[in-house]
Image (cartoon, rainbow, N blue to C red):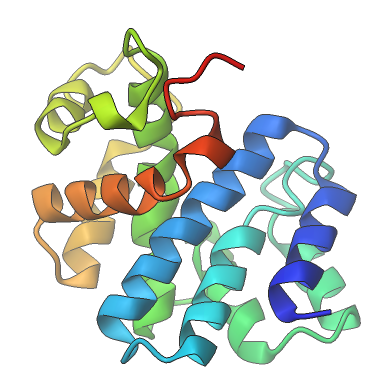
Length: 193
């Protein structure tokens, strides 16, 4: 079993919510795209970055409190033999964990997490419920509407892009494109299911 298959099995073991599973897939797609951009595009790096994206919230459904997530997940990942690098990156995505984001992978995870959720919300209000209808400009406009997807922290999206060293609009467009590659798996391909 490869790392990606193991990670998917772990995610589905702990996460029954289809929307939370799709969030993991969306963040994975964004992380793999950034690995190709930043991490010399090696298959090993893409796999590592993808697994980190897929698993970052795997424990959230069972352990949603700030006292437990991502700490319980970190313990489970350690028991299951995941690397310190993987576990540290996942810990760093939670602002309150006290784990600083030092590597490009850690910064990318933080930058992609809230944004992937926000892009999904933007696609779901389009007439065709399709990522093909979502543009970076419209996402920026929706970010100003505080009532829309109110649980998404706009400052995390803005700060994540800045820490990653990418222009916000380019970051949004980059993540939209990455997610379009798996639009069918996300249920955002415009085909009614």
